[in-house]
Amino acid sequence: MRVTGAGTWEVPRSVLADSVLERLTAAYAAAADPERAATAQAYMKDVAPFLGIPTPERRALSRTVLEGTARPDETDCTAIALRCWQLPEREYHYFAVDYLRRHVRRCSSGFLPVTRHLVTTVPWWDTVDALAAHVVGGLVAADPKLTADMDAWIVDDDLWVARTALLHQLRYKESTDAERLFTYCLRQSGHPDFFIRKAIGWCLREYAKSDPDAVRAFLERERGRFAPLSVREALKNIGA
Image 1 (tube, one colour):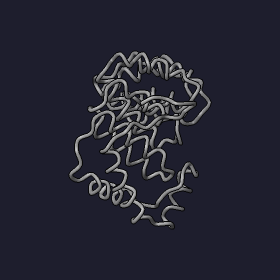
Image 2 (cartoon, helix red, strand yellow):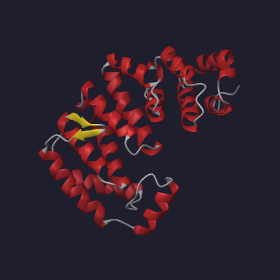
Image 3 (tube, rainbow, N blue to C red):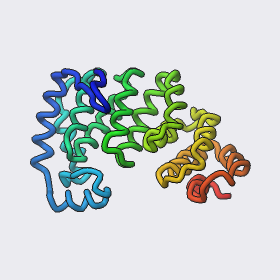
């Protein structure tokens, strides 16, 4: 796999991807509901067209699509994800995210550039957040050297890349690198965008489930640097 131009990826050959995509497109297209699709697209601020398949039904269809298929390797994961992202309807992107969440342990640290491509292509919270917490977070946990990449991502001009860095430790609980988490929050404390301010509060709120005293002490020291939204989110479950 390699980048062939600005933001363009060459999809690797994968027999598994050929089979999965053939089944997937047939199953999803047959279940499309134009009325639901219009509602979903409006709710998601027209980020992408939709087929109109509710999540429970979509995941049931996905299980049928994948029934009897082989375990993927990294090349298969790459091909399936990139080919799904080439399709316009958002449900295919959701399928790819779910697939990567399930098989992230099959991928090496070399998969991180693929996740960046997914995060920055047709970006919105519905795909970015799951990729951050479940895929990027899994890759970094498996290879701590990737923290250097997260240190670069947190100051990236692309807000979705920065949001991914903020959220990648979301599921780490007691294994969270608190110093890095707090540093990331401070680096983006002045960001004007809602999605960064919300992410700061969210990642602090999640870590507070493991160490509320640390989060409370951090905000006591640095509260003035954060937007009220970030502080409210961070303290939602532990109080001021």
